Structure formats: C-alpha cells, structure tokens
Image 1 (cartoon, rainbow, N blue to C red):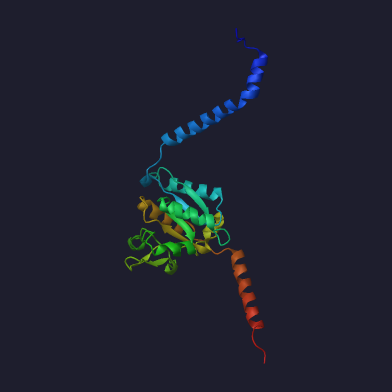
Image 2 (image 1 turned 120 degrees about the vertical axis):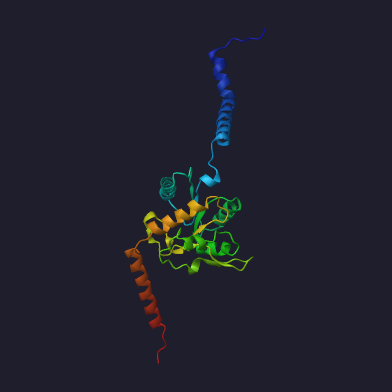
Length: 238
C-alpha cells in the first residue's frame, strides 16, 4: 500500500522541487487580473477626453502631469486627459519618429507641440486642423504672434491655411522645462473634441506669454558678438 501520510519532509521536498509551479501560478493570476481590469475599466470616449503630446526633448513627468491637471481643472466636462512626452531631437529621433507616426496613425492625441521639422513634414498633408476660423471668430486670440511659420499649403486643394501656432515667443514654457523656440502648437484634424482643443490652445497662448529669460538674452548677445568678431577676422587685409 502506497504511503500517503503528510510529513514535514514530504512538504519540504514538495516545495523544493515544485516551487516553480506556485511562482508560475502567481504570475498567471496577476497577469490575468490585470488583463481583466484593463478590459473592463471605464475609458472616457474620445469626445470626453483631451490628450496633449510633446514631440521634442524629454519633458519631465512633473510637467506632463501639470498639463493634464490644468485641462481637467479648466474643463470639468472633460472626463480624462493624458499628456505624453515623445523624445525627438536632432541626436535622438529614430524611435521618436516611429512613436509619432504610430500615434497619429492610430488617431491618438488631440493637441501636439512638435518640432518645426515634424510640423513641416505633416502640414501639407492636411494632418492638422485649420485654425483660421477659430482666429477669425475670436475663439483663438494669438496676441500678435507671428503666424508665418505656422502656415501651410494643402497639397490636395492648394488652400493656404493656418495649420499651427509657432511657440517661439511663448517663453513661459521654459518655466516648465520646455524649450519653446523650435515648437509649433497644432490641433489634429481627427480630434473629436475640437472645441476644447482650441480653447486649451488659446489658454496656452495666453498663459505662456512671458519675457525672454535673461540667460537667453545674454546667450544670444554673446553669439552675436562672437559672430561679429569672426566676421571682422575674416575680412581681407590690403
């Protein structure tokens, strides 16, 4: 007759050689619960959420969280907001380009603050909402911002539109760790929350008005002096 009595030695042996079964079971339970939660969790419909994507150097979580919090505070009707940082710089743009293309292809993100290079690559295809009407109606007050670099000629129609708002003069962004000098603010043409997207862009334009930082003024002056000195040294002598 087979011995079936449970002893300490048998329990010790069981866990010594069969521990992996319990570890695997724990992983399956955790993953399964996470999948169930993800599948059943409430998600705000796209016309009730407003997402902002930065496509530039890495933006700190403190800033992205602040942007989302501002949206939810300004617009109680908006149920959810997500702010994402996509790293895209001259030195690091491969994965950023893939991410950006993927997000836009999936219709993600209502407002983008992207480098002028990326803006120029997409603007002629009609990817962005034309903002001319919002400006004309007063919904978007550009406060004398030079919009020339935000204009686009749409390839299919030949129409000339305001596709983005140059952020070069919005130095308030620097107070949040974002270099505004190469950024353009755009509303995506596929957004399902156009009203709030335009209103938040207007809020950004109003809130980020600030004087150029002293360090930047000094830096630009130093570059001008250096350029002038170099020009003098390169002049031919007779």
